[in-house]
Image 1 (cartoon, rainbow, N blue to C red):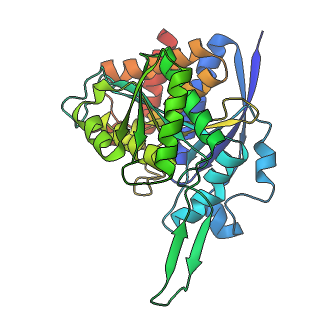
Image 2 (cartoon, rainbow, N blue to C red):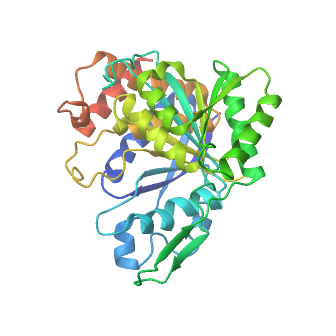
Length: 354
């Protein structure tokens, strides 16, 4: 019996258009092995569209992808469009309208990808669970007295009990399936209202998950520890801003932000979840055929797992991991000369051997 999935593709900008075809090729290849059939609908939502049409996506755009099984996004951003315009015109509306309140970032040192951090060996394997729809990235605030010496800007951070409890419960539940260790990122010694509230809810969540050992760390000390001894971590849970910064730092510790994946999850599956590589649009190499497709391929693996196909997800992960461990080919970001296509072909070959 064939299982069919309809996937919304948003290539976006720059190398985003170059890394999604490899991810789809991998999905199709593993799909043939597991009785999975993928249908792709492509949407031209991007900074280029903003320049020509005045909007990152059309009015009612979210309704066009609301009933897809998942969203694969390439990258968003271009020098001619301010970053806050591209972000608030596309990514944040998708995350919030579809209640993708979990941002999940796996951090793993892969064989064949040397880390710049001496103690980051292949036993580094942890996840960052980031609250994804509220916290410091709120819409509440504004500007006053523009152009005058008294000009000011106000940005409110929003931490709700519901929003904080659900991300904490997700993180503790993930920890329960791993080594059973969780670290909460906080800054309650300096942020007097939101972070003590966060800490209180962490303690309550810890009581709901007695099998998980947990502790809290101030974010400034925590980032230092991630660099000094990354293998000590299993699950890190953090607010929107802290998780955003921490997960990119951790990806660099693991060897390259160019290979890092991210999942924006609606765990209840009431809405589609979205999967995106972390590397961004990389205008400096766009169009050269040298972009690393690994982040997008890893996203495909995460998407397979989310859609209920863990064996297929594992095969994709094993295929790219074995390619890095055994083949000499590397894209430019990893110090090699392989093209996007050459590296993708090696992963596809490894996939057929599994």
